[in-house]
Image (cartoon, rainbow, N blue to C red; front, side):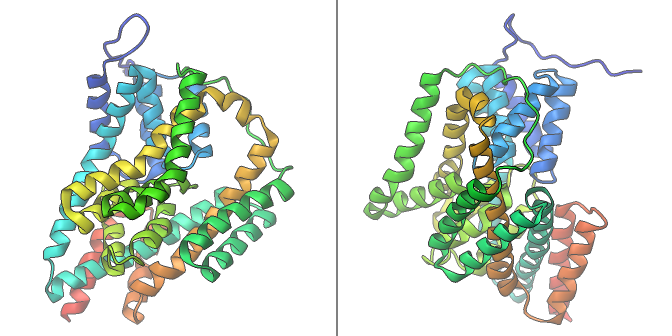
Length: 402
């Protein structure tokens, strides 16, 4: 028997209560394994096929908008869907429901990892670091196929990697993104353009959008001046800037956050990579890794601060871009610059795969053998990342015991 669409209680305008949005996204936050691409698949099944909150064209346009913006694309699509159904309160409800399950789990892991002081605990954490190598390598291959499908964009990616590895961390990353945009404007104008689609049905005025973009810019350029006046401000500035500059998906947050927290001594490199490996075993957005880092730095309060800071740019950018998206997506110069930025992002991830991911995790033939098996499971056997993380942890503990 054909399953009938499930439509939630809504008023005559098709709106839902924020609590209804929270309930649905909380379930998705507890069950959405597989990373950003899988998250979008869950959203499409839930909100296009099952609940019919959006039609296919509107959902595709939301995905295109959020791919265009920096930040976690799947979380931004969730924010936009919540905004569609229940206004700004719905956007907050969607974010809370989708984010809190994995954020709480990451904070608990931070406390548990601190208690693993014995040899077995250290071996388990090293296994998570090895799993991170395989996950980043798989993400890199997927991004290469999508974002560098030709020789011009592949060249931009390799040049960006060289730039990142040659300059100080933050300077190199910003320079690579800027150089990628310039290269796109100069050399990538003739690449393919997307099909035209109708604008998504989101009621955000141009005034509200302009104010959100203004707030985004004020925080991005103003927070560095406030950062020296206390560690909480320094944390908020570092994580906000990271959330504002992450093009290309959640895995790109790795090199940006590593450059912020490890050189300053806030988090050790081993603890950083162990947390990143653990994040692969959880549902929900990878950006909740910020909660783990905050917990390592300063407990629950710092975790909440870092989590809000890294996601705040997504709120402001989604609200700010929606009223102007129709014109922007048809601008050939804007699309060319974005193609260059996306190619540079592949270079950032390529550089991160070498340092700090590979250099910190792979210390000998046994580690290389384990990461090879992990990559085989992920790439060829399509094993779920959380399963690979557990296998790597157990295997590393077993090798340490032998």
